[in-house]
Amino acid sequence: MASGIKKVVLAYSGGLDTSVILKWLQDVYQCEVVTFTADIGQGEELEPARKKALQLGIKKQNIFIEDLREEFVRDFVFPMFRANTVYEGEYLLGTSIARPLIAKNMVEVAKKVGADAISHGATGKGNDQVRFELGAYALMPNVKIIAPWREWDLLSREKLLAYADKHRIPVDFKKRKGGGAPYSMDANLLHISYEGGILEDPDFAPEDSMWRITVSPEKAPNKPQVIELEYKAGDIVAIDGKKLSPAGVLTTLNALGGKHGIGRLDMVENRYVGMKSRGCYETPGGTIMLKGHRAMESITMDREVLALKDDLMPRYARMIYNGYWFSPERKLLQGLIDASQATVNGTVRLKLYKGTIMCVGRTSKSDSLFDARISTFDDDKGAYNQADAGGFIKLNALRLRIAANRKKRK
Image 1 (tube, helix red, strand yellow):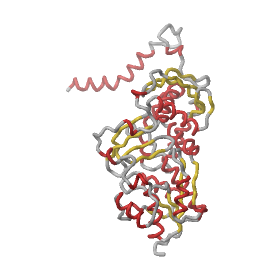
Image 2 (tube, one colour):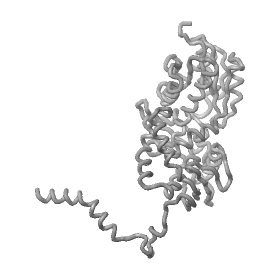
Image 3 (cartoon, rainbow, N blue to C red):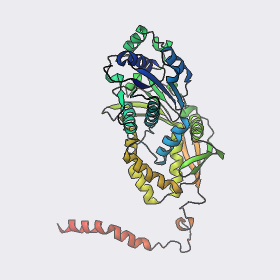
Image 4 (tube, one colour):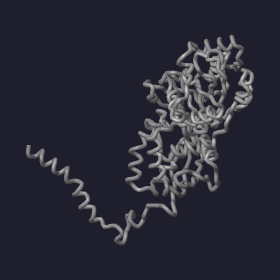
C-alpha cells in the first residue's frame, strides 16, 4: 500500500461531496473507511447517512453517528458566550465553534478503531480545513490527514456527478436536476449559514424565502414578548423559571428569537486563508444570549475586569475563527474568562420585538455591584462626596496641562 494508510475516519454527511469522497478514498487510497456523522442540531434526519454508508460497502461496525448537541452547547457554545465573543464586530461564530467539536470526536473514533488517518470534505479555499486539521493535530499529533479537495481534479459539481454516475453512488434527485438552494448551507444548534452561489455577489439581496429559522421583522408579531433568563456563573440555567439543559436553553431561545425576527446577519468577512467572503447567517438564540449576558455582567462585574474582558475578546474571537480552540493561549484565556464569571449570577428580563432586543430589568441578590445609595441623583446622605471628583480630575488632567503649556512656550 503506497500511501501507508490502512484505515481512515471520514467526516460523513451522506451528501454528494462526502459520498464521492468515501468512494474516492476506497479507490485511491485502497484503505478501510470508517464514517463519522455528528448530530449538532442541524435539524436533518441522520439515519439516511447510515443507510447510504451501508450501500457504499461500509461495515456496520464502522459507521458512527453521535448525538453531540449537549456537548456542543455545554463545552463549546457556552464558554464562547461567557466571553461575549463576536468576530469582526458582527459574526457570532456559529460555524467556527462547531469544527473543533467535530475534530475532537473524529479523533476519539480514530483512536477507538485504530485508524491512522482522518478525512474531511472542506474545500481548499475555506477556513474549515484549517479548523478541522489544527484540532486534529492538537489532539492526535501524528495523525495523517486526507483532504480530497486539495488532491483530486473533481473541482466542479458536474465532475462530482459524473464520478457518482460512474461508480453508482446514490445522488439526491434535486442535486442531479440542479434543484435545491442556489447557495451552500451549514446548520447546527447555534446557527444556519448561507454562502456561495448567487450570494457570491455582495450586492445581491437574498430573497426572504432563503431564511429558514427566523421570520422577517416586518412579519414578526405586533406584540412584544418579555422573557426572563436566569444565570449561574455566566451560563443560562433557566428561562421564565423553567430549568433547562444547555441544549434546551439554545433550542428554546432559537424558537423565541426566530418568532420575533431576531438574529439575521449579512456580512463580508475576512477569511483566515486570505480572501474576503460574503455570508448570511441566522443566529436567533445566540443573539439573545449575547444581549442577556452583557446585561447580567453590567451589574455583577467589576469595571476594570469587564474592560479587560472587552479588550481581550477580539483576540479570543480570532482564535476561534482561525481554528485555535485547543491551543494553549485559548485555554489560558478561557481560564481567565471563566474565573471572571463566578459573580455573574442573577436574572435578566429582555423584551423581544420585531428584530430587536431591549433589556428591561436585571437583578442579582448575591453579587450585584450596583449601589443606589451612591449612584442616586437625589440626596445620598453622604454616601458619595462630590468634592472628591475635583482632585481626581486635576490629577488626570496634569499631563494634558503640561503638554499644553509646552506648546505655549514654543
